[in-house]
Length: 432
Image (cartoon, rainbow, N blue to C red):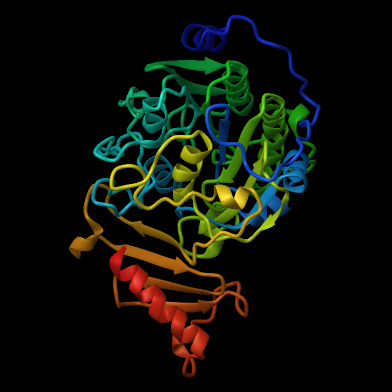
C-alpha cells in the first residue's frame, strides 16, 4: 500500500484502473511525423546490462513485439557503465564535460554526485516549461545518503532503489531499500521488477508528461525470478539466471508498455550498457559489445523499421525535449545532444559518428594527465579507440572485423576510406 499512497499523494491519483498481466501492447497507427508539443507524453525505459548477445539468448516476446511494430535501433551508443550512461541522458553532455566529470561508477559510499548546475538536467528543463515529471527505479547518480538528489534534479516525484543491490549483501530483488520522495524504508514481499513496473504504470495512468522507469534487472545479484515470470528450466549458471531475469523483465515491461501506448505515450526503451563481463559480455570496455546496445521506439507517429542511424544516449536529452515541445540546446541545455525526432519519423539521421569514453576518477578533469582516460569515435564502418590523445590508438574496420580483434594501424598502409576516417576521428577526439 505504500507505493499506492505515494502516487495518490504526489500525483493526485486515487483510484487505479486494472491492467492485464498477460495482454500484449495495443498497436498504434504510425504517422508521418512523431508527435511533438503540448499534447505529447514520453515514457523512457532503461534496462540494465543487456547487450545484443543476452537479448538473443532469452525469450523476450514483448521486446520482440516492439521491435516488429516500432523502430529498432542497431547502432545506439551508450557509456560503458551505467553511471556514465545515466549522466549523459540527464545532462545531454559527455562525462568529461567540465561541468559533469562523471566517468566511472558512483557507489553508495562515493563522495561525488552528478552536478545539478550549471547544466540543466533534463527533468528540470521539462518542469521549467510547465510540464510534469516522475522517476521510478534506479538512479545511480549520487551516493545513497543523498536521497533528495533525484528530486533536486527536477523529478517531481521519485520511487525506487537508488543504487545497485550489490552481491552478497543484505538486499535482494525481494528485499530492497526503497526511497519514496526522500524517505527510505525496506520493502519486502514484492519482486523488484514487478514493483518498478507497478509504479511506472501508476505514473502513466496519472498522465505525467515525462515518466522515466529505470529497471535494475537483469543486473546482479543474479537469481531465479518468481516462477510465473519465466520459463527457463536450467538456471544453474549465472548466465542462465540472467536469461530468466531478462524474460521476467520482458513480461513486466510488456504490461507497462501496453498501458503507455493505450494512453498515447511515445515509448523509448534502451539498455544502459552491454552484458556483464562475468557472464560473457563486454561491459566496462570500449568494445561495441559494451557501448552499442539495443534501443526501441514506439508510439504516435513513430515509423516502424530497423534503423542503423548513429544516435546515442546523449541524444535522448534533445529528443525528449523536442517531443515535449521544450527548447533545448546551447551551453547549458544539452550541449552535446542532437535530437533524432526526424529518425523516429523514418527520415535520414545526419550524425556521422558517436562517441564514448571512460575515465577513472569522478570529479577530476581527465584532460589533466593523471586520470586514466579511454575514448572512442565510431562511424558507419570505422572506429578509433585512443588511450589518451595520440597514444595507444587502435583503428577497426567494423564491417570486415566486427569482433574488433584486428587493429588496422598494425597492418599495411591504410586504404583511402580508412585513412580519411582516421583523420576525422582524430579531430573528433582531440576536441572532446
